[in-house]
Image 1 (cartoon, helix red, strand yellow):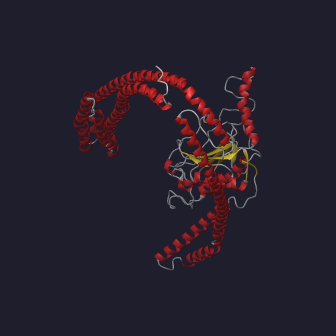
Image 2: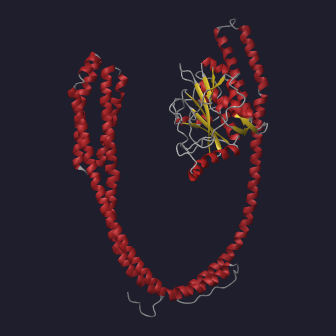
Image 3: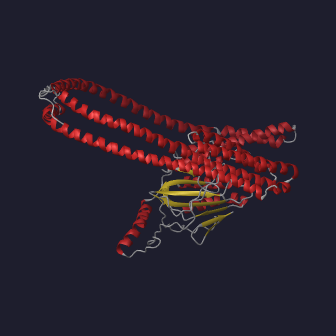
Length: 610
């Protein structure tokens, strides 16, 4: 590239260079756009056509197999409910045909194969499925089973073969699209390399030609700008070099003058912001006081309602005892409603009072052995467990800092809910365990009850939230709200594990003592130290008195308060594979197996049988 004629301005020099580079890049871009368009079409075909077609063909085969299975099941049992997969599968099959035809339009051969699959499926329904249904309805299951012959199976195998051929055709089209994508991508890479070379050459020429006319004037201008940046906003900026730089110097000086003006406005705005912040701080303080007053109001309201409510309940019970049978049946019913309503209101107010006291009336944090707490919980729930023939077990639990009455209330709520929300004719089994995850203890309460649907996992911790009527499961709907408030008061969090296979698992965290965290760290570091010195065992990673393998029951959970539903979550029996560290805990102090119904198992687990 030859240098432009002398006397050209910087603009003309740059425009000439950019014109040449622009032409070269324009041609390259035009070609790249064409190739990229092809690549996009091929990619669209693979991702948005053959990909969905392949998945839908798999689903189509599954739907057809479900229909065939439903026909066999109906022929065996005669139960109309066994035909539901057949009816639903037929509807889904038609949906898949419509969806696949919308994607398969550019592949005529695949369209003919899809028509063949639909025709074969229609013939199977008319020659096998519908006759089996009619015969079973009219003549019974024996006659229906007689129609399930080897010929009917072979006819369905024809459908399988047609779907397989369709899938093979889709795979062939997908591979063609993938080859086209690879080819056009390679072309794009080559074009981009050529464009990069053009840019590199143009950059080198531009660097050499602009060193003298750009860099030096800009350096002088930059020195003046730095003077202004140091705080000398009154320093006037002057330029040198081409006319463009003279105008640039004038623009920078105008900017300096505007900055000086804006700086004054910023100072004024800062003063206004500081005033607004002071007002916000006052509002925050008012909000804190308001929340404290609301909490006090909830306590006072629930406390002061006790006396009139006791009077209403007492006189309603007197009416019930004195005039029962003396009035008509409707009057006795009304009195019973009044007594029940007053008693439920008393329970509701007592629970609300207990909820408002959490964190407000405090005895201070102390070190609490959760094994002792579980012993107390076993004693409190003994009557309910005996009535339900239930069983309560727990692993060796840690010592944490907290308020023992609140922690007892927390675990008693979870265990009581597990017993209450049990499955009919299935004795409740509740297990409590703990593991160290980071600097927190994750404590789990697992049962074999009715479980919780995942969509209700967050709602059950809302105060007064119930998923069952009071006739099905008694309660006020505040138990798990109390659990959540106690856990958060101790600096933890609580949630429902929706991945358990049976029953319900409620997990919550509590901060661990520093010595427990340090013991876990030593347990994790010891295997590496043993490997480095040659003294460590290379087998299962056990070191000293600390073990990283979880050989006890996995963390479980409890039934969810007053809001249990029907999910069967899975027990977490993996050996601490999700980031938890199992620490060897001491056996429970005080041998609390006696007096609470608890008996230590051979592995250190304690059991309380109702």
